[in-house]
Image (cartoon, rainbow, N blue to C red; front, side, top):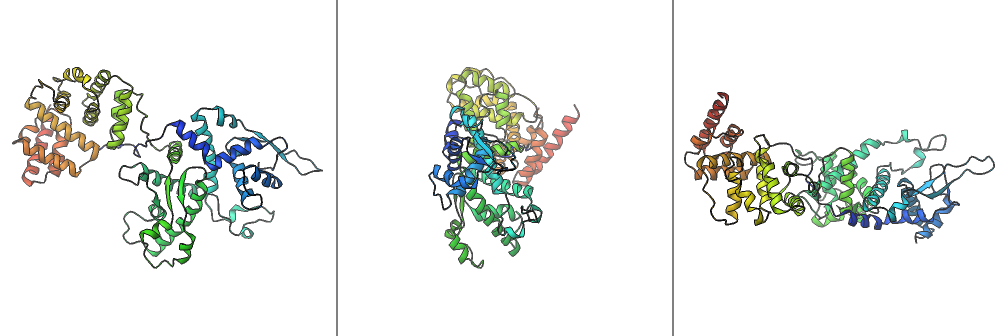
Length: 483
């Protein structure tokens, strides 16, 4: 207590159909699709699948871009993405001693999925395009090609200060932090995150007070690298990005503190709904536990209650609402009550989540709830549900049930939130309502009795009550050991 929960809070994703429409409307994927439809048998490609230089202006024109400015570069980028995402299939160049060797291009098997596939198919194609852009984003910056060109005229990557695994890990860490800020109930949500704060989250140690000049320089370098990367990731729809104001960077000498206005000029970034899907998909691929609201809707009540164990309040409610929408109230209540039973370590929190879920079930569930009034584990839960609805003829609980329910509730809160301030208030309130609480509590036949009393001894603000709790915990352990 508390038990480990998911690595990340659950994310609320938009329906696949909406995300697929978003994916198809992203500038980069839309351009890649257009070029895939434009490519034909006479479209020449090089050994690496790149479009022949003299065709780049034609490709730019097809995309409605200028043919002598940045248009050919954008066309080249879209072509690479189309090839990597399987929208275009290229054949190997045929060796010819009398002519330059060229390959040919044609529609790839994924092109048909763009218009004829399911939303999940479209999202799969988009994820392949995202992988291609991610690879571009972590590629080395070749500011001075002369320094890295080998004797054979090719780029010598050994001369670069570049570790592809480290670059990928850093960018994925940044995206993971941005994801966490977006899905956490106390995080940024839909609000954009300042680039300095995002860079600092990866560089500045949590226990560092005032950052050193060396750390600040690392943060500044990371910001500039992220600025380049987010500019690449925005056209594929992963983020919405307000780039760093280059004029501000020229003005800054590093001596003046940042104002709120300055922070926004240093760049703002937020994950799009499509970006949430993309980052989560990458994390799942890497083995990260990244749940999504709705995943439990078609599972049994036991899986629901276990899955909800460490969900934040709003996400838990949303999950329960989707689960209940697929079931009749009476059936749902019966399943929840059956799943809430158990003397295992997770039982108390399971019953707490069941009580919260039952609060969303209609009055039609009353017969199922009344049927467990005499159940030693569920009787207290049933009385709470009935009382909250103003039901008549609710039998008063026996004193033994009151104390059992008190232990069960505190055990659940310990599992859910640990030794929180709210739990301290609950403990103080319970002991204040029942004189001689600890004289009776150590006799409660509950698997968590001793653990709960020990926690009460640590948390109770009154010294005498805390001492009584510790004494009761000792007696509870002695009683359990003598059985």
